[in-house]
Image 1 (cartoon, helix red, strand yellow):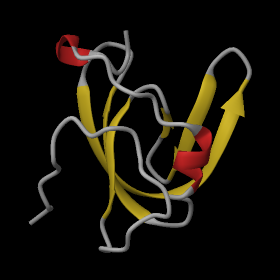
Image 2 (cartoon, helix red, strand yellow):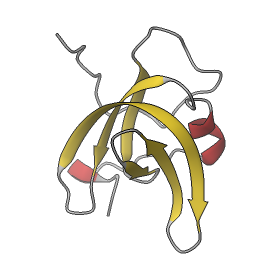
Image 3 (tube, rainbow, N blue to C red):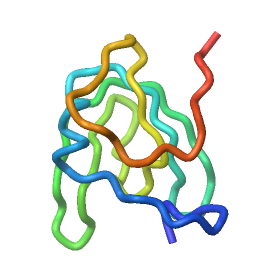
Length: 95
């Protein structure tokens, strides 16, 4: 099941939480449908709800299901107005 890597049940990010990141540069840790871990550095352009698929984060790099997101953080140091899904691990800053 996406978002449950390592046997830990995680809270799925809601659409309203995800919308607080629109227009901001974010570092996003996520696990794809095959269980592979990814880290994407991108600007979030929009949040969409697709019937039969659920919520998606639209970024410069790719579209990411909200169910797959394990951690999201702002790169610029600004804090969003609402809390994201519970982070599994801290992201390391890009060198």
